[in-house]
Amino acid sequence: MTKIKSIEYFRVLPRWLFVKVCDEDGHCGWGESTLEGHTEAVEGTLNALIRRFVGYQADDIEHLWQTAWRLGFYRGGPVFMSAISGIDIALWDLKGRKLGVPIHQLLGGKVRNKVSVYAWIGGDRPSDVEAAAKVRIAQGFRAIKMNATEDVDWLDSPRALESSVERLKIVKGLGLDAALDFHGRLHKPMAKQLARALEPYCPLFIEEPLLSEHPEGIKQLSCLTTCPIALGERLYSRWDVKRFLQDASIDVLQPDVSHVGGISEIKKIASMAEAFDVAIAPHCPLGPIAFAASMQVAVSTPNFVIQEMSLGIHYNTEVGEYDLTSYLKDGSVFDVRDGFVESLKGPGLGIEIDEDEVRKVSVTAPPWEPKQFYGLDGGIREW
Image (cartoon, rainbow, N blue to C red; front, side, top):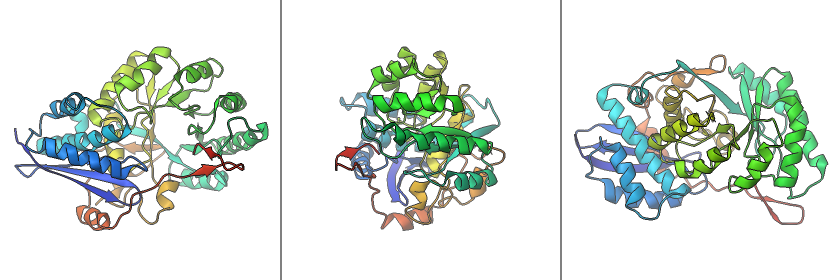
């Protein structure tokens, strides 16, 4: 049993926030606290947690998690939970490295040898999906996700939805499975229409057909469509998830390991979902540490189905040269073959971070700002 000696965080391009935890014996682990568009708020929360947790036993991961959750009185929400996530993931990585085993061995061992993955195409305003889909096929992917629409008004012309159906038909025609991310952009009048229109073309799932702050609307929509409904990136704990499982309104749950309290919490959520016959497909348009942590969960979770992968996602390419493998010493551990990535076999997270590159980039990396969508009338629209 060794105490935590230091906790550091690093803001890096394109929009990620890494965390490093070291103990007094020199063992270290890496985590990720990325919360897209709210980096500085998470950094402030990390400062408070660092002051509290330096000196705690590094092996007592659950005790640290419970201390952060229960002794702060105010709890939950994206900023607080993302800060906890980075420290939690780093502690699991540290423990695995110290014991010389991958994290999944500490979670009960493997239930599969490789992980099904999907990539993004089309960007925030989806276009030219045929060419992008062909690139993904050449990269080894067998499934993709794309935004279902551009920004849409609360009640818009039905013509605004026609291109969504055509894009799905094009991608499916190339032999790919395709998930459609409504991204919370649609409101009930349009979401109901689009779900019905997509149904004959069998999307892999429709994601956030409504914002998760509308559980009653999602329950209603689930009774109107046979398309599998997925959501979860904007749910931050098992308590947030509970309502949707009890309502039987979703088919696929998408917790994000960097938003939901880390590996400790996402495993609990996955077990809850299994009891309600709900699949797990972790959200992860983020960095390599979050992806590796998701991989460790995926290989040890019976109801896991498919993993989001940010390789070449528009959020990365729009900022510059830094992509999913840019901070890894060996990016080949994320190679995609026939739609799968092999389970990570190294100790801890199973990746080696290029710390020199992380420290260099963090000196000048700015915080990433969310997109802004406005309608023709100048009113704000969901992005």
